[in-house]
Each structure stands twice: as C-alpha cells, then as structure tokens.
Image 1: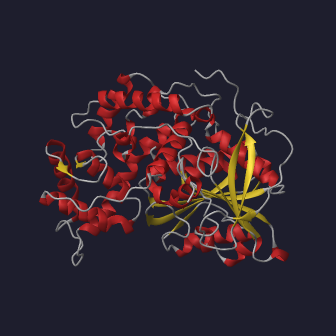
Image 2: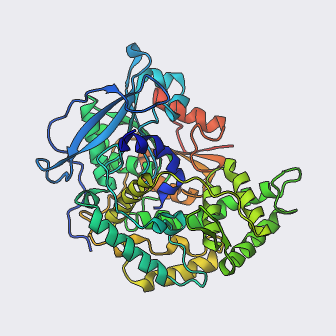
Image 3: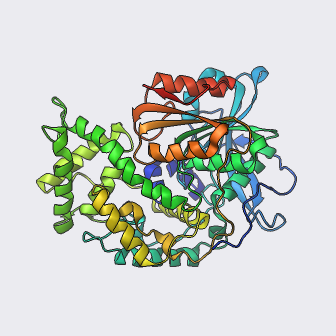
Length: 496
C-alpha cells in the first residue's frame, strides 16, 4: 500500500484533532490564473465506499501571484449526478480543519443528501493544498508535539505560558526547516482560488457548496472573492469571520462553546438510569470535573501507549473538549472521568499513523499562521490566559494562549479577507444552538457580516455539524429544500 493510499484511507480518522491546529501586501482579490485545465477521471486509488466515485488530479500554481511558476497537485473526486437529464451543476463538499479532506465525502456524507440533490448535482470532493494525496507538506514535528494537548496550547497548571512559547518556537522552527516553499503558500485565500480553478476545470459557470466548520470560512472567503461564481452556498457550523484575528478568534470561541455545551453533558451525566452516570445532580458535574483536573495537574496517572504517556489535567481538559463535539462521544468521556477518579486509565486511544498526523498538523499550522499575523509578545498571551482562566475555568486559559503561530517565521502574504454583503443573496447558514467548536456567537457574527447575502437557521440541538447530523427534521428540511430548489426562508429561522 502506498503512502498516498494510507493517507487517504486514514484522513477521516484524524477528525477533531484537525482543528488544532502591519500587513503591506495588497488586499485579497479573486483573480485566478490561466486557462481552465481539464480533469481526467479514473477509478480511485484504494478503497472507497461507493464504486461510482471517480478521482482526478488538478494542477494549480504553487503561488497564485506567479501563475507561470511551479505547480502542485490537488486530488479531486466526484460522483456524477444520478439523473443526467435533471443535472443542474456541481455541489462541492468542503471539509473542516484546516487539515480536513472531503475526498471521500461524495461516497460518505454526500449519500445522506436527499435524492433530489443527488439527482441534480455532481458531488465533488477534494484534498486541499498540502494534504495528501494532494502534494503533501510536513513540518517533521517531534512525536510529543503531535499530541492534541500540545497542538492545542494548554498553559501550565499555574497559568504560565513560558512552556507554550518554547513549544511554539520549536514547532515553528521545524516547519521552517522541513515545510519547503509549500508551507508558505497555505492559506484560506489560496484554497479559495484553488476552488475557482476546480470550478473552471469542471466546466461550471457557477458552483454550489456545502462547507462544514472551517469549511464555512473557506466557503465564505470563496463567496467574497468570487461572488458571481456561486450558486447555492450552505455554511454549516459556522466560523467567526473576524478579519483582525481569524484563527485566534476561532480558538477563543472554545471558551463560549464549552460553556454552551457543558450543561447538556452535565444533564446527561446525572440522568437517573444512565449507566455512565457521574453525579446525582447536573450541578455537581462541573465542580467534580474541575477538582479532578486539578488533582491530575498535581498527580498525573501513567497512561502507557498514549501521547503523552500520562493522564494529566490538560489531557483531561482536551478530552472534555473532544468529547463535547457530539453527544455520541459522551460515554467515552464519562468512562475516562470515572477511571481517572479511581486512579486508573482506560486503554490508550488508537492514533492515526504518524505520517497522517504530521501532514494534517502541517496543513493546519501553515493555514492558521499564514492567514493572519499572531502576536509575538508573551505578555499578550499571559494577559489573555489570566483573563480566560478566571472567566472560563473549564478551558483553563487555552483558547487565548500562544499556538506555534506566535513564533511563525513568515509574514502573511496578503491581508485577511473581510467578509461583507457584496454579492448575490445565495447563502444559507445552519447552526446548532450548542456547539463546542463553532459557537452560536461566532455564527451570528458571520451572519451579520454577510448581511443581505444570507439567511441563518439556528437549530435547537447540541454538537458540531448541524445539517443531516442530529436528526432535527426542521433544519434538515430547510437546507435540503435550498440545495434542491434554491428556496430559502424569507428571514432567519429557529428550528426546535
């Protein structure tokens, strides 16, 4: 089995951990270079869920400002529209991350779409620039730095950020040594320009899209840079578009996301008859968790086979963050908490192959750090962490701490894209009311930025991913109708 095949097969395993992860250049523009390439469709390498899925490779400029310079590969997939006579166009599936792939999504989540959408649209997936089996990038990070509790910048138990700044320098140096030219050319705007070249290669005048999580920011940037090449755009589990902070705003959003979601977990964890019950009352779950995390700060438990090989307070906090992504993860989170209270650990979780983690981490790092300049002063993070720890103890200051971007050696090549209401009114936002990763507060800011271009559906549900993910018939019906017919609600809607 080739490396490309292993990376393709294992990309979905990475899941949540992909989210880890003065400007003088001119403002971003939507210009893409050169004539449209054609795509040579063939059977996909490796196993896919649906034998109808086809794969191709798109060649794009490494640097969109140098269209005649070196080129890189973008891996693309499709399942053609099921009713050729009714075909309307192409629906691009945009994964989260940065560092997520939708290459197998036409065979996976795409098959959850209603028949009317599958009849009328080719379902298109792709691996973004830098992510195998597209031309891959790596930072060659130390094994210990691939731990999610390192990729997320959890401060020391006393709130110190000194260790985080040292980690940031070590990681950024590795990316500079090993990332080559490609690491400098990973950004959301670059991905949006790749998408427009893909649209042209597909032979489409306009393209529809369903972006999820970070994919909502990609979709919004595409709609900003190429407003008249959009058809029907769904942004699902929506990122904050703050043009001054970008990824720093997303990271900070976890404070509110955990606060919004934790009460739902606490109610579940205290429900009578629940075999995974942790407390008699929902109000007891939070103080119990905080006491346990503090105890593990002082007395970590050895955890052979895990990374790191101990269950400390920050590993538990990261497990909480991961566990709140969707209610189906609550039992595993409760199992870990019960074991830790006994002074034991469950079997270490299975990790994806290291080459997959290295690749995903590098794509995430390059995109997050190239999109916007992060502060380099430890004092900025010390202040933010102290304020965050006081106001949001469950996340212990992590959301305002220093990632490797604090030591990133490359300045952004262009200013962040500011999302506005310029363009056609063809965007539908769908957002769970309780979402740990993309909280409603951030989605509301995206809704405000898009103005007349968008309508938002807020769903009375818990978890990350809203459309076709949580059984809310109202929300699913509204989004499906929009994709199938273009019909949207006249105004923002709340779905119970």
